[in-house]
Amino acid sequence: QVQLVESGGGLVQAGDSLRLSCAASGRTFSTLKMGWFRQAPEKQRELVAGINRFGGTYYLGSVKGRFTMSRDNANNTVYLQVNSLKLEDTAVYYCAARLTGSAFDIPREVREYEYWGQGTQVTVSS
Image (tube, rainbow, N blue to C red; front, side, top):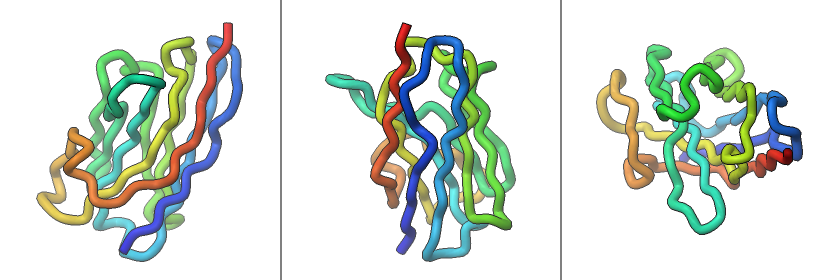
């Protein structure tokens, strides 16, 4: 089992930055593939960033250059640095983990992830 706890969300103004954190426990963290998803009201949950076991990353096109995902295996934590926030970034951000599969893969779909956090709200105002 893997437990995930997100933190770092909040109410910010457009153009501001936040750093979201996801602390993992229960399994050897370095073996996990991790993802940050977001879900806005009445929209489907989408992957904004993912990281494989070796630090390789994936980003949704609309966040490239603004969001940076990283992992700290020593502290069992992944981060999502979100810069230049836009109104359309408003959503609940979820951390997810997948244990199985190739170490090089970065799963893209909700159904591919086995463990989820409870989410942290990010609200961007004008």
